[in-house]
Length: 524
Image 1 (cartoon, one colour):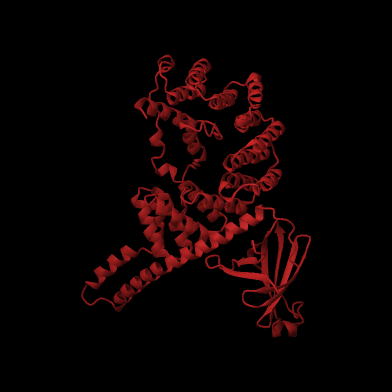
Image 2: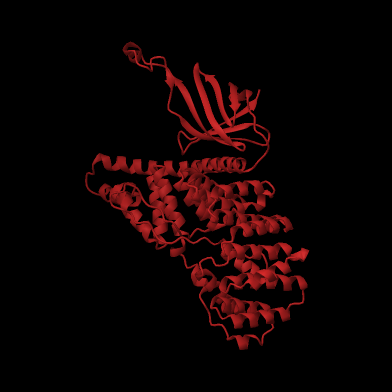
């Protein structure tokens, strides 16, 4: 690519970012423009740092890494030649850059001149149609004109490019808040799509359009309706859209689990890992969040925000030395919130290096107190203990991550009627009876002469559950004649369950969030 092309693309990228997500996605332009814009569209940028308040006894996470990393500096605007000069070139990439630059600056005549020059250089009839669809779709947002919609509808008559053209027509209607027509047009585009990837992108746009129309609950049902028609590896855009819908509905937990499904499809995507980890931590899934931050640091060791946030998770797990090490790592990357967290942590406990230095100084003094040697040994023991415990924590994080990914699949995928009434057996060979009616079920079993029950309600083939055991009355309650003298069901332990592909009921209980337990039931 020539320096002129690079400069032109730099200007385009900068203005696209500043437009605040002006382009939702680009399905067309499969050449240079397509890949660049697609990467921009997937970028999620969160701003700001959370202030650590003095009275709060825990450290704060950073909501984003972008303010600490020079990501946008790679896309600073460059000088772009004037349109008359650009029209002398035959390079389509440079012309496209000029066209978008002119559109964003509302220089419509220049934009049209660049577009016409692009079309003159293009010999593929299908690319000519795609080019025009993109130009008309974006121009409609800058300068609404009914003729743009009419022309897009005309272009949609060509079978080979029908899906691409209809997608831009649907986006135009969505932008105009003509939601009913947008929905119908998206469905047409989905029907015409020839690949799972394009179909998934269109379903995601459809889901967002329905939600934007004021119907987030129906948007979720729309997503579920189409999700089962897509291959597993293509579902990431739809899960991203569902996550936004669940958050709009106040379901932070499900929203976070959907972002974890995005990580499954894009395991090396740093933005996906960070966004999922942050949301999972907010939703209480600290173990999986820990695993995601740890994985992110494998791909991006210099990511100071991930290091800071992983330090917060280590703090939550009462691993103070590991937490301080991570805060130091983040602070070394000039992360100011990590510095504040480290200062807070050092004032409380866990400052291993400072303690070690202090103990060495004390040990060098004449007749040091016996506690000095004792604490030196204790410090080293604690450091080794946490070092050994960390791999086990990551292993548990991966196990829980795989369970929750399967649970999320089962929650959003329709697989026919679910009926689990009858006799079952746990992995531990404990016989279990399940009663199931109207989506709700109760499982009952006895272990060690103690009765247990599990209750839940299915959504598709997944359920949030509660497990309780029967509490025998105390002698005092019996003497006092309490209403609980005959026993009662104890405090519920919350968890999740789903039916897997073989029909087994897989269960996890989160009595201890950092060490969840698992059980599998099979039909007797």
